[in-house]
Length: 305
Length: 144
Ligand code: SF4
Image (cartoon, rainbow over all chains, first blue to last red; front, side, top):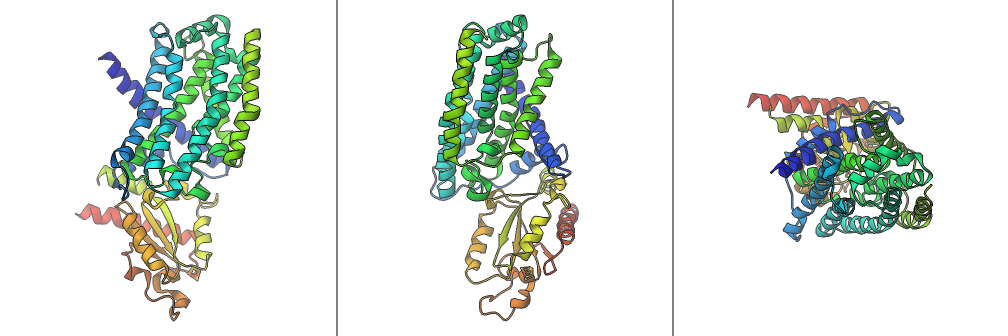
């Protein structure tokens, strides 16, 4: 019963609120960087409420179940990850063996939802968007897992969040070591791709694919997709805070908070200063330099640097 | 006013449809997004798909090839949808009124909520027009 409450309160409500605030921050900073005023604070909330009140259209000739299930799969993935991270951060002893792997698996679900929804939409642009999203997942998943592996090796082969947090509270943050810095950069780039932000927004490419995989979605289904993306915008920096700054523990709350906000600002700045890559360039980028960096981080971690 | 309506008025997402304009109106619409006018202050953004839109912004003298597409787009839009006609062309066909290719004005094809005159209208006029349509909806729904 307690788990269900955690799931609803932390996994959904708190994550949604924080995620929408972070996505407001993203829009505001983008606007300020372009010398604009930007949207008011409650704009993302208003958007979601408005979308919930709109008509839900289902295109002709689609599989209704897949079409409507796809956004739910995505949001459930984000909710599970966020619940796990919150619980692990509050009670590090509640961790279980392999929860890091569970998180890695569930983090793919939002992308999977987009892919399923895109292919189920019966629209050529959506199919192209979905296939690009699929290639992007294949591209960033390898360096992402390698970089997480570097963190696991550093903390003495602990595949538990609790141990990673405990190790960092005793021996200092991973970000202060060479392998930590390198794997941090790798995960930052992968987070950019997971969020579908500008250098890697090939799946949603507004100028060429209209809205990509989400083109046929309207009303509440679109709201769920937007909410999932906003939640991921909070969950991924949170995951990175746990992996590299030792989570939000009382001992170094301020440093972690600083790190958390720094990660978000870095993501937004990268978004605003880069043009979009083509899908083949993105694939080459992730499998080439980024994977090499990730392997370097693993080697450094084995050497104990 | 219901929460639904309030939210709709605070975040109108705009789909931009050119029904054969000379492109000048379209450029003025894009002007509204620039730092000088910045309509994102009011929650307006341009979206790429009609299924995401709350406002259908039409420019241009409606030519024959476009008519079936306009009807299709209007039917595909998730309701409630507002239709805004920008520019002289979309109101009365402007200088193309005698053209063989522009049989009827736009409001004979789909219902229009607000007309913004001008050839092309200034960005200020476009923003004022959208503000008016918001006022209109507020009043009409309040009286009910
Ligand atoms: S109203 Fe004027 S500026 Fe606008 S499309 Fe027509 S001719 Fe061009």
